[in-house]
Length: 347
Ligand code: 5GP
Ligand code: MN
Image 1 (cartoon, protein in one colour):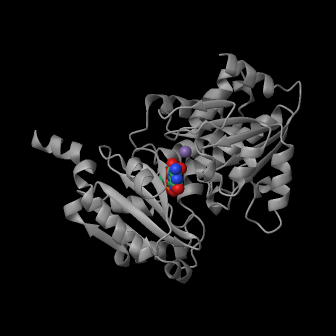
Image 2 (cartoon, rainbow, N blue to C red; image 1 turned 30 degrees about the vertical axis):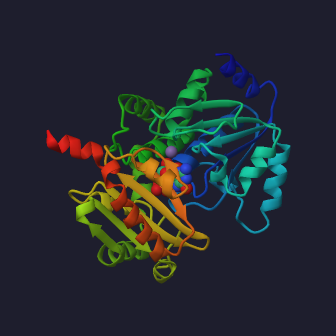
Image 3 (tube, helix red, strand yellow; image 1 turned 120 degrees about the vertical axis):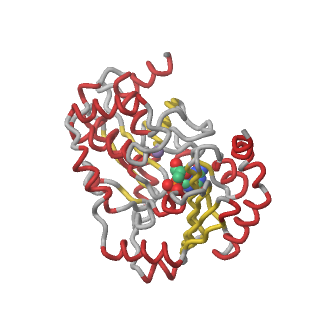
């Protein structure tokens, strides 16, 4: 309770502060939605707020209020401005990640900063870098936690339609459109409140899910027919996408989002992965069925982590060597990965 009181004091309108809000590399709807919801809320409390992302993000998120003022660290000429903003900040918020390395180069700047640091997050194994942590792996989304935090500090009345729509977006996508096992009673209660405040759920769904470019759909067809490997014996399926593939379809940030779920949707598949070749290595998305703890696999072998059934990681090996290593590791660890599954089957 003491910590919450201290936090309340820090964000009190009585003493306006310089505030930086940041989130993880390649922000998704929960990362950007929570950041902009918080920014809009803190601005209402008279603070000077800047949202900084470590990279760009999908254009289907650009409708969120405050998007135009977001600073992308990777944009030419922005690194110095970002360094100055972080250095001068009284408060730094870290949203939707649990370890500073998810900020890439900005991680060290935040670590060095003397600001009061706040971490709001729902990922596993949070590192101890914040003065105030509002964290729960029970939460489906950072947006759910942020809603609860605003209510807890007594500011529910400050949540307007714009803030509610940012929060709704994060909840909708992190629950996979209210389909994943994390879709709790509480998430429905929070969602009901947000719709009550004015969030247009149907509009947000359309803006996020139904704004495909022709290239994106063609890329999806190509990936499904030419880049999907299915290992039925290992209950595993994965996509491997090269830089050349991305170029051919003029792929934009966000175009591969959701692709990995097609691999997991196959009957009998318990582990799905998407390997995407990027300029600095291979980025990996992992998904698993409920009984497989894919976050441990991601953390142990691919310097990653995340949630039990949705994690990510990276590889410095070339694309082909990465997928070969992945297949080998799945084979070698199948007894651990599928142990629970096999026990269930024997019943
Ligand atoms: P996605 O596959 O959608 O990029 O990420 C799935 C989940 O894994 C997200 O919650 C994301 O934050 C987490 N994640 C993705 N990449 C990494 C990574 O490199 N390291 C860690 N620790 N988590 C990651
Ligand atoms: Mn999230």
